[in-house]
Length: 329
Image (cartoon, rainbow, N blue to C red; front, side, top):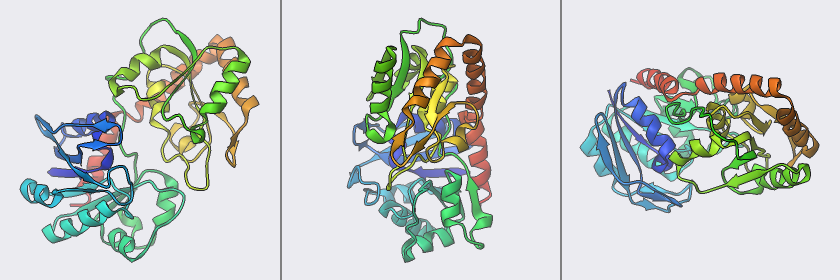
């Protein structure tokens, strides 16, 4: 089977590594933007995997973006299936759906919108006529489920993580608490900084690092912290991939119960309660102290985290995705 996958996030190395893994099972052509905000990716071809970077209209706009010349690529590649990792309310999803319909090939759509439904007539048409709908979390599934769609729906992460890159390394732990990601209030960065300062522990807040440099960064820390809080317009749609990558490096995680995090991480992390845009700061500091002062508990959390991360390896998720895509044929 030849799969053509499109996504605005395909210029991120995490996605590239995943679809390269999938290409060991079937032929994959990935179409993404040449650039998206701070990310860039040049076109290349390796073995059974090809990446095609296209200019992007309305780059950075998740609703109105569109890849230029995508129709020409679809005609040239002639895939057996088109897999759109685009929210069904996006302009690119509509374009891809109509082109797949014209080419008479199965169309599969991915969504993990977990806060509100956008089912106007065009979105309803896409969801009702997709060969399969892949939902990134249970809330997304519940938002769009109907009796007619249910048999065509699968709950599955967008991608996995590379356990070849993210693995424990015995090295000097230079910081007590680490955060990696966007420096925004909704991710709880200010809480992490303030609480670590009050505890007198060494912390590091990092953003904008090259993806393949992250394993070294994770392994430099004793604890990984990510404290996202739900807002009226957003809540975590996955387990937060940084949480999973840190666990894969043998670093215990402290995080919140925001959105799909408990769904993905189960009992592996230490949880801090969040509600209405705020985090239980005392709970966070208590968990930091518990991990730093109790070696047996710390080591137990390391092992649980490693086991949880293995469930999301690229190899595991690729096999599940291929089964879902095969069912659309």
